Image (tube, rainbow, N blue to C red; front, side, top):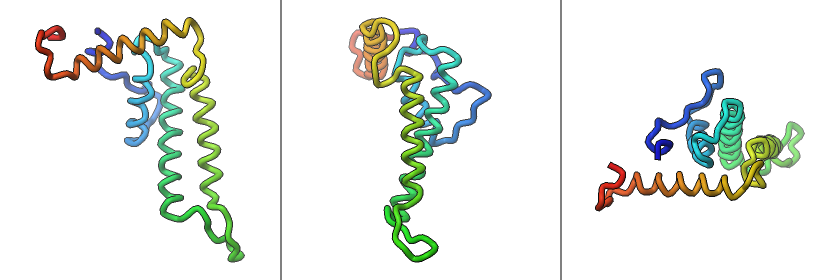
Length: 137
């Protein structure tokens, strides 16, 4: 319960995150119990947040420009941004593997699931305004 009441984890001071990347940061660091993060993993998590923000930005531009563009010779081509999105997706997957997200995790997976479940359930209870027993007060 202390993890839920604690201030949100912030990125390391040596890492810059855009406002959009901060949105992804929250989802990333809440994917595991607060006390399970190491300082090195927080740096990797920040890189993942930046990467996910770049993917979203490029996909927005592709939507605006179209999937097919015209090259300097007037020939249709796949929007070059699509290659960037592919590169960023591969980078994001590599960073997720580094963080042991989305696959088998180091240690006993049952312990990791229990920690995430306990913190998630506590977070839901903390947000429940209809706590008739005042257990979290």
